[in-house]
Each structure stands twice: as C-alpha cells, then as structure tokens.
Length: 122
Image 1 (tube, helix red, strand yellow):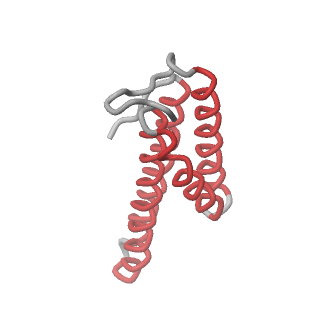
Image 2: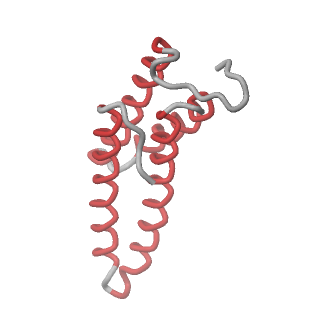
C-alpha cells in the first residue's frame, strides 16, 4: 500500500484494493466459522491467513478485523487449556462451553460488522 505517513486508507480511496481485502476478510471469517464445525483445525489455517495479510491491511477497517480474529484464537486457546485443566475440579466443562459461546459470538458479530463495512469493537 502506498500511503504517506499519517495518511489512512478508507473504503473510498482505493475501492478495488479494498474489495479484494474485504473478500479476503470474508474468507478468513468463513474459515473461522468452519472451524466450529470441524473441531477447530481449520481455524489454524484462518489464523495463518489473518497473520499473513494483517500488515497489508494497515489503515483499513480490515486490519481491526484480522487483529480481532487473531485475539479470538489465542484467547480461546488459552481458555480451552484452562478449561481442560479445570475438568479435574468439575468446572472445566463450563469454561469450555462458555469459551465456545464467546467464540461463536465474536465470529458472528465480527462478520456482521464486516458485512456492514464497519470496523470491529475492542
């Protein structure tokens, strides 16, 4: 992306490139959603995709979406490990179930924001 320091890129400045970035972001969200159904393995592919393009998306709303998906992965992984360890004290299943609901919420809400061409919340 060729921008001068301090200049941000919006959807109206480079529409062709932003359409490409938006399509890429939709694919990453789809991979994260498919991971819900297929035991989480596709999410690793989505994580790699998010990391690969995130710097290219700097200055656009899509950078925030990739950052949010990356954080969602790492926080979910940490909570999943905590939940697995806490299974021995009988609260693990609750932690794992809560993490799953939180993960689904973030992916769905993030996709809705992306579909509306809005940035994500943090």
